[in-house]
Length: 470
Image 1 (cartoon, rainbow, N blue to C red):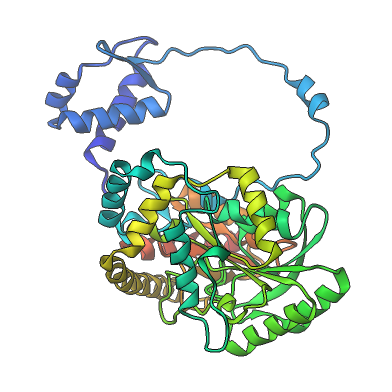
Image 2 (image 1 turned 90 degrees about the horizontal axis):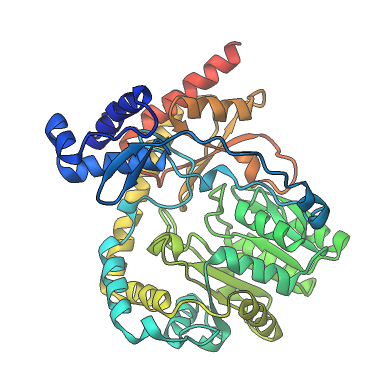
């Protein structure tokens, strides 16, 4: 992959800095523009890169200087160990998907769609209108803007079969993203030191939220077709759990979608056990070969608590999610949400509603489906061509492939060595609430530069071949 002009200038300046004395002043922007035949904007971008890496420091109106090496005296923070005591619940480390990829890296690790997959024009226009409108200076209702709550309720209500009561706007709560929402749900519906059933594998963010709340996770085996209903019912009986967290549509990481028969069986089990199903519909807007069918639309008895985020499909900067619950559960959830975040920014809510209310939103979703299909197929073809020992099932929706590798794979070493070769991948271990049942990689097809996918898979294959040869 060729480097950008700013990267080439930064490389040249690194060599200059390496031989210069601490405090030495770099050539002026005008000099660098002439030397590298570049624009002032390109030169400034290169300088910002070096500044972010701690190699130089800039002084307004004067110029840029080689950063002097400072030897900081060590601090003793041992007193904090005694003051804090042992952690009540040890937090898992944040997994690879949250890492920011550097330049010239093939990124299979991320969970957020590339900018090319987002409705950029709609988002920019909506944010501009929200900034000019009353929402920019308004204190919204704690449950969310009425029109946005009505939109979430109508979206779920449109899938409600005849004979069942669709959700009302009053059943909806707007939350600052699904990650915050899961913490609220686990506190309000489960509670610390109490059991929560969860598919295994499942979303790492739910595993993290459970650890933060102190919930005891009870894994239920699940695969591309969904959870084992016999194991699910047994887990309810054996543990006394009163809630089950699941992703019936395009699950992260497997991409699996429940068939109608399994959905009916799970609903029956949940009702029989007088329990809750926490349905995470994170990929509602990412159908490829199928459309999502929320289980919450088929339940009006308050057993299914439904959460749907707009953060991934609209913009990572618009952390807005909608939650639908009925009965006393809604009041408990709202009370926790009020205590945790008070309310969600009215400007962000207004912008989110603006985007999804535009006719162009439907057009964008049609285009998105086509783009995701092409990206998924490109990555599947590359894996089948270069990694024949890996097993993948093309998902019918979502953003990821779940690839099983040979059982003798040294997964941590593979991830490290791939990164050394410029390819970021995510080890599947992060998605298991207990011990992993195999060696998996979760490979995202929503990242930047899909044309580099075959090259990235070749790097994984070469790295794996070297590992197995040793």
